[in-house]
Length: 558
Image 1 (spheres, one colour):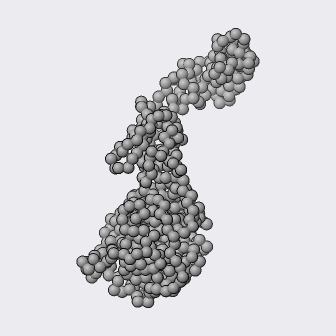
Image 2 (tube, one colour; image 1 turned 90 degrees about the vertical axis):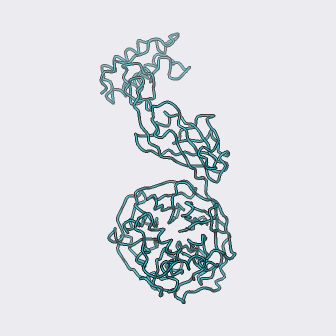
Image 3 (cartoon, rainbow, N blue to C red; image 1 turned 90 degrees about the horizontal axis):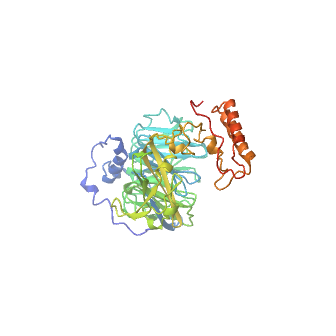
């Protein structure tokens, strides 16, 4: 927790740039969001001169800063995390627009979903009362509504083109109203859960209720208020649920209580207002009168530092999550009497060979890095890949990619791992295991190429053949097992003979019934096999393993 004054300010940067004339924004989708950030940082929008003097900048609410504990930085699978959402179970949803992805991460730290195909997802909100997820797309100016299984349900308004840039979303869980900050059109709009427009307000300017590139929104259900981060007016505006202006707080600057580039917003249960200051690299904490009561984080790249923080959420456990876009990380802090249910440390996993030919010789090698954790605390013998155990004594430690982060190399049986894949193509391999008092978990996507090999010629490919070395021309079931293999003459188990010939015959009768039932054997064939079993020495005293029931010639399988 930092409460000292700041030395980083606008004074050394802003005078070098003109604030006159219109702003020209890049049109490349992957640069839209950061265009807004740069506009704010460079002062090109010229909003400071129009800032309303009515904004509160001080008061005495008796609020004190929270006690803050840095917990960890979550790195893997993130390009540029921009917006966050959280549900009642503390599952965190992260938009990664540069990769067109949305990620979902459980409260225990496990990455449970990484979904592609969203275009340029810049904003997200979750309504877990109505089981709806809202995604704002900066590519086509739409907000799409999805089910919890990521099935597209419908859109807000007309869909594409409804918004200039849906920079942030918020849901009132009581009514289901969806609030959208349309940054390029300098407005805020409210929609019903079915997607119908209810109201919109704003317009470009610095008067009460006007905006200059607004970027963040929060519904304070305790006070029935809407808070909007009015980015280029360097303030937070507060409205009632009908969109009527109530007040504003904040002023431009870099000292505690002042705002540089305000974006993400949150209000905690005691009324403290948290604001991500994208330029200053910190979380500003204000009271409702605009007084600064502290800040979290510091500008930089080390764990716990923030570089272009764009959004934040606070979970039921009392943990604060911050999207640090410039560091490609999710930073996690504990507030006051927080709980920490995290069990999984996120790992980077790389699998070789890729592509993976299932029938080729050699083992599969998995390399594991767990940033921030010593990999020598991993218990290699307990690591699994898609549930397949590691080959004993195959572990080696090193720094294979030369990035100064130690890694662990371990090997897995190729045929066993191949049985976890359903078909050729791109598949995900999940790797996890113990790491000190934690577990680590990570995944890699590889290209799998199935090569069909049927060593015993029984029509069942080796990875799925439970009974290898079947006698040629034997009739087998879907597991690749013949009658002789299901009911071995020597006995039902290794070193366990049949009690008598009757026990052996009973096994053969049951097996042939199943073969007949699925069309692998005719009734007359089954009868001949049973008669052969009754005449055999299997199960008879002193018979050894001579003369089993035999299997009929396979011919064409039915």
